Amino acid sequence: MQTDVVETRAPAAQDSERVQTIRKVIEEIRPNLRRDGGDCELLSVEGNKINVKLTGACVFCKLASATLEGIQAKMVEALGEFVRVVPAPIGSRAGH
Image (cartoon, rainbow, N blue to C red; front, top):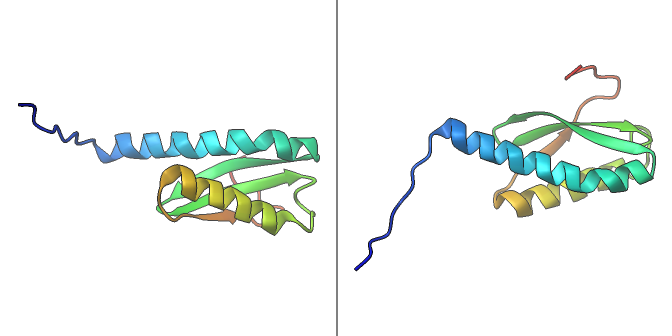
């Protein structure tokens, strides 16, 4: 009879896996943003807050909030938990 094995991971390993998932989601949506002259980059992950920077045409696009909502929905789906995708303020040099 086989018993269930519960794997415990160090928080750092979980965070690393989580950040990899977040980066993967961003990489999946980047071609669509680039097609329209924009882009998105991950700045940081702080708990359930994912800080991103929209660049190029996304900066002044009227649909940027809809784009962020779409990115957030994909993040929630991929991670299986609620997260907030927060854009860096326009002109922010964070991450550079």
